[in-house]
Amino acid sequence: MPQLNGNTCEIDELPDGVTVTIKVTTNSRHTQRITVTRNDEVLCVFAGSGERNAMTGQSTIVANSRAKLQAKFEYQTDINAEWRKSHQLKSGGPYAIGSYNLLVIVAENGDDSDYNDSVLEFSWSTST
Image (tube, rainbow, N blue to C red):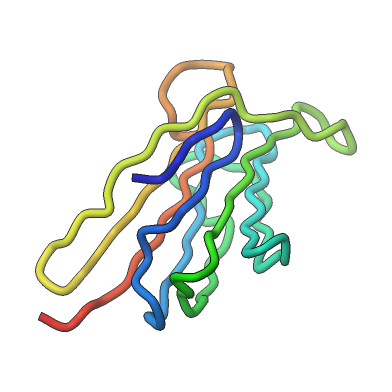
C-alpha cells in the first residue's frame, strides 16, 4: 500500500523496469493538481478541473525499485489563487487482475466527502 501523509503519498509497489501508465482524472469544479516526482525530480504535473471523471492527463514512466515515487495533491478555489493542500487521501491496491495491475490514490478537497476530486491511477502489465 502507498504511504499516505497529508496531501502526499509515497509509492514503492511498482515492479522494477516495468512501463507504468499514469492517468489522472478529476471530479471537481475546482482546479486540481497532482505532481509526481522521483528522488525530487519532477516526472509529470497534471492540472485541470471538470466533472464525470474529466481526463486531466496521461503519461508513462519506467518504474525503478530503487527510487520511490511521490505524488503531491493540491487544488485551487479560484483562478490564480494559492495552491492548497488536498485535505485527505485514500488508496486502493495494487490489484492484480490476470496480468493487469492497478494502483489508485484519490483525494478529497473538502467541499464534499466523495473522495474523487482527484484520481491518480498507476497501471502496468506483468507476465503471467
